[in-house]
Length: 311
Image (cartoon, rainbow, N blue to C red):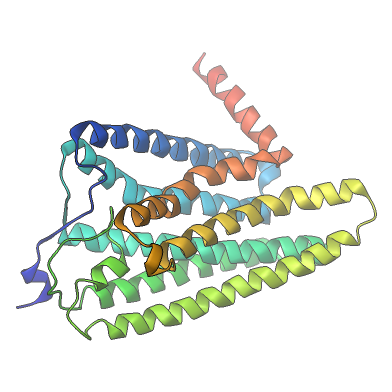
């Protein structure tokens, strides 16, 4: 019997047992989801409409906001629907789609954050060659490489994961479909091939992380050589938001997938997975607009322009 015909649906982990708490989770996640849609939507619109923001840094930020919108839309609407309708079911094809899009968007986001660290390195350490090294064509190629690498990563892992025979039931210990939870349902030794792919992916991720660290070591060395306080402020105002997003992304991912079994529990894993998959897309717009004066001005103009158009 094939893997597809033996399991037609999966059961996701419920947030709560009582109806009142389920509805509370629904309204809480709805608020977070709408905040993420509004924040990322405003950033995308502001960057697209303001010609002053048509620079490499904001081009990559626009791509990041699109990825954030996609990643939170992959997991949260289904979780909200399950809480609202008091169900745990997700179809086999829906689970496969969720695994693919979540892996695609999250991995592409990490690759894009790596590219953004290179953008900040060139802007500060190679300022005279910024226009040459990061022209419009180079930016498009780097963004396309991030999206393409994420797509290939997700395609390989999704195809390999759902080709495994599953013989440990259909109950997932997570509120959305993810590869580690599905591997727990696979038959003995049948998951080793996917584990090998995950190890290769971890090595690639470590390489990206090392690249980011080396870039920022060079950035901070260059900033310390800037004589004026105004130059320090300008450099940090563009670097700190990116560094904060990288830290949030890596720390939540670390605690989600590398926490020790001794402190692991279903409730803790659930909370950490929410922090990893839901919080960064909602918080990233706030982080990036908090210290960025150009983006603040563009958002203010956008908010002021909208009511005028309705009059």
